[in-house]
Length: 131
Ligand code: MN
Image (tube, rainbow, N blue to C red):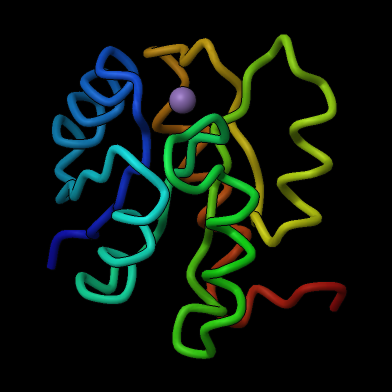
């Protein structure tokens, strides 16, 4: 079964690039271009992981992460914040809001998939937080 990834991102170039990279590694991709749509699709499509931009219309990435973590059925899904290199405070805030990890923008096409896979491996059920 293909792993399903939801991308919540309002920048068309970033959306295109992440989608292209994921599909070329055989992931199934679902797209949302604003925070509210991202929450709706998280509930409806049950992705195995969520890539979450921070600067988003409707609800920002922190609000989206907080909302998803309130939902018991989505509490375990890895949320990977895609944060701007130029905004150092973003990472800490994203983690505090419930993100499992982060990948920095600009997205590096050579390393993006490997960064993602490494983050997902460390957040598999049973990987044991603090064990
Ligand atoms: Mn954005």
